[in-house]
Image 1: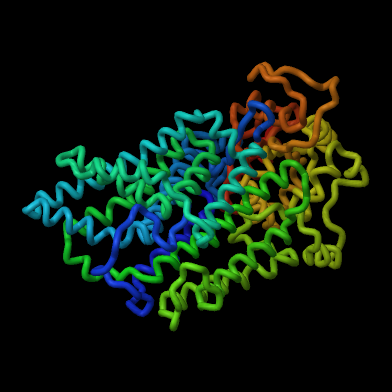
Image 2 (image 1 turned 135 degrees about the horizontal axis):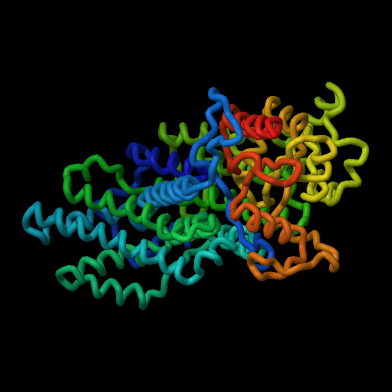
Length: 570
């Protein structure tokens, strides 16, 4: 499962505000007024070249190689549905956390006592109130899941897969998240047309199931100014994973988290007394989410920067922006910065203080990254370490002795100067052309390790930072293998016209290096996910089944050792 940094932080900020005492509360439930959503602080709100499209690969192995057992050529490292399952669970959990965060929005949280009171007074009996609240929750789930399904139907699975590496879409998503962030910070509101909101609200006055359905629909449309940015971000994240049902699964998690509190409070009305009072802290939740949206937007801009070789959002620039964003968030939490819709902060509550400590600690953690620290906890979100202009690790390696190199002819390898300086982790010198690497493997009588990777591959960056950086793994890659890295989402390198061809597998014209790498992965390995690791003999035949990302160093080392043993046994 991917590192859901933003989801985790979002959950921390949202969950702790639930326990906030009345120190941050300025308004009681008694005088809460409800509008059409226009609250004062609300807001809204590889290209695989042509048709070859790919998604990040998590752990594609049905069973990891047991590091304590003797591993041979038949090691069970096969690709199956494990990746899909983990990715779907990740999307669902992100949706769940997003739903809990949305519950604490100013457009939803104050509506809880009113909605529960409606059920308990109108129903007459407790059992009927519970059944109506349950149906209300079910309709909320149906509405949001239907939205997710519409996204899937409108784009189709192939188009969703393409979004993850398409430069235009990634830049559009960057702009979209910046708009969402500005909305949460109070610059403007993103609302649905008032005429549409009023029509839905009028239908909710009907009785029976139809009335309950439109009550649920009213919640969705009235709260859109607060939930819209969260839903939009979640749908973007789910869509760019390339999973066919990703948007629907994300909306399922979101709607469950949103619906469950309404049902629980209807079942146990006495719990309302323990709820914190609404007040200025609700807007603080929105502002915190605005900062997180802004930080996440940079990831999509980085995808475009890497794929098109713009080279303006290098790793240290990216980190500097994050340090500033989260530094401002910390200052906001301690009351040094205020926005237009904020209530005066007279003193800090304990939960707010603890969150501020976490944020400032995160800022301090990132600072060494400006000089090349690996920052493994967030490496999946950062540009490759090779884009770092100033890296103290290079000075350390040079002082300790010359790093491993591929020989004097390294710079003469195909595409070496283009990829190597900004992509590969320090201490490795791979090839970047399959035929050239296979010839080198034959000459040196070593197995060939093929790494299908991409600029936009989050799991690839995580593998490089957490596994390949291990001295044990790096030594195996340098000494036991010929390594070739094949990028499948680069937009710059083109093939000579004499090397253009039409893919027998897809029927598409192959005219760039990344298209050729992508077509090779599909044709030979029947896979379209990255990272994918294949260990081949000197004839280009697989020695052991392929593997996806394995974040356990010992297990990944065992996978590599299985290839070495199989090669020696031939």
